[in-house]
Length: 471
Image (tube, rainbow, N blue to C red; front, top):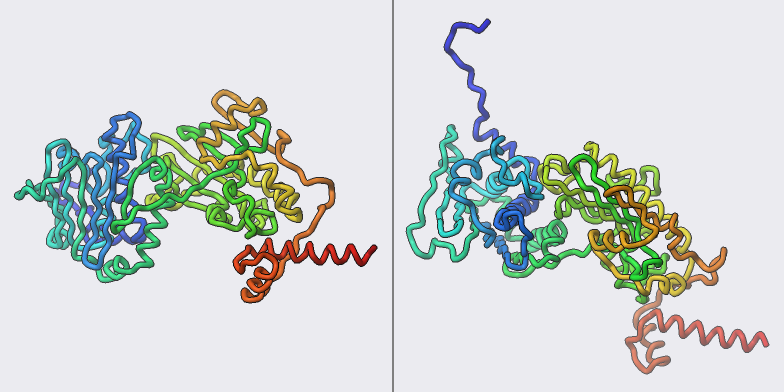
């Protein structure tokens, strides 16, 4: 029975507590990525369900000691959305703007959390169609106890009107630690790397992202696929689990690196591909993690721990759904929810694919490069979607309804070493560069011949001498 008293107990969060807790679990780089992610959501909405032409979209990000800004031409914020949804601290149940889009925003806190992480004051200026307005977030509003609505102001000068539909967010009054980070070249490089990884697919599709005036290039995560339908190919698996389409491929990652002298004991070059060795996890085209080599993605859990021998192995898995809450990703969008059912079921197939290529590298690890690289000469490095499409054309791919599965080990399309014992061994040693140049000049009349070629020629000369003495 209810008490007759009309008194009520306050049950709303204080603003100071809410802002403090909201920003505690996200780092500064991830906050910037959150704002960039909002730009891409704008491009999706602008396309109205059609295919987005990312080559038409530009995002400019500026970091400095006194301010942060991000500017895009991705359609802007409609006034009604700004009034009712965009600046609320959380998403209302009736906010179904993205119900038909493949995004990863779930909670409606990304823009606000990023702003509060950086500074005390901000201005959001936006143009949707021909309607331009701005929303200021001030220190006075942050320090006030109540949750008064933010003002929506009209631009008073012509220079304040944006040339194209889009949004500009400027954050001023940066916190001291944030200001130091934004002025640090190392932090700028970290942000550049994070964007090149997290948004690699969008960058490959033509999106332009400039950080302090310099364009960001994508990190390519690819696997080798033979152009011949009976040649070597990666492990492939695709299945819809609940509301999530799961796509997996595991294979070799060094398609552009064959033939170099700088190789490891697998016979392949140690190059930038090793940075994407391990697992890359995508959620609706965003790379949540890139090149993971830990127990998180199965290494050391029923299969060997990661070792440099496996640097030529890359696995790519993507989770795709219009239900962002079904994706195995946390609110930071840069970490996995490994307790989700869709992740746990997928991990079994990830390990199955890894075992194929771990076995492959074990077979080949003592053989020379030339013996195995010739099997991959007609192969191309492909992204996840292109690799699955190419493998799906094979006669020996397993298809059950919409499910696709291909195990190259079972299909017997992986190259095997010649015979049971290696035909040769590698010789590795180091000498001072001055001595290498001296020998290079003597043998080749130039002092900059590749060390591998110099060493090979030296061995041939000594082998000829040894053969003569044996006669």
